[in-house]
Image 1 (cartoon, rainbow, N blue to C red):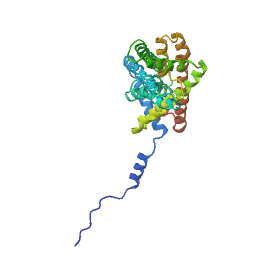
Image 2: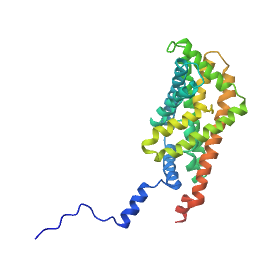
Image 3: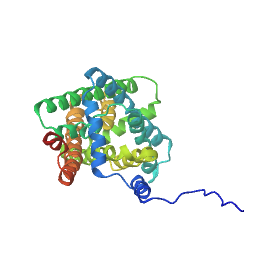
Image 4: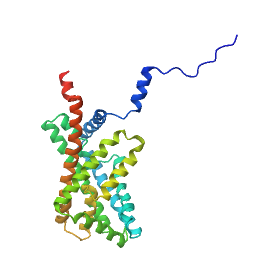
Length: 286
């Protein structure tokens, strides 16, 4: 008597279909919120010395954006399309900082803010300000160290150093209000990038490149990437330190904070709370 052939697969159950649909669907805003919230709590728990050294490394690494873009501008032909190619170099510093998990101030306009919005106490606020202060100072010291080396060494040809100085002049040229407005756009886009990254998977590199490329090509004011350039200008004698701090670093900083905190952290937290309720309050009530 002929034996029945063995079956190679079992019918898919409804439960398995639901599980597969869940795995293939995009994560909800609440899941993204919880992932960043968890990361924010971990960052706020880190000691100040660890934040400082990571922030210093990030400030140095962001100099790679200036180096790569300046060298590309120098060697590319002087044509209308040159900025479209050269600004690809602007993404290099962000790639190193983000993939290397170094502390960049503009990322922290979102990540530690969610725990503060979840539990708005004076203690939480002080901890956020501690993280902000340590990371910002460390980032700026990294920018300063790299600018001094670039301006006062023969690491780069004089013609390339002149390109770096020209980049600093372009950052410093707009008015305080324009830099502030451009800083809002930059802070908004960088914080959006941070919001997207937890579930970008294999597309992480492209998310970083595309978003930071748009920031660069639109001349939006990123406080750390731009400060490397204006510090290099000041170190070269092309502007005073007061001019670069007051004309670029301060308005870019304010703009980045407004863009990241209000347009991304605040709005995305609000949509999650509105859709699903305040999870901290829910846990306390339980």
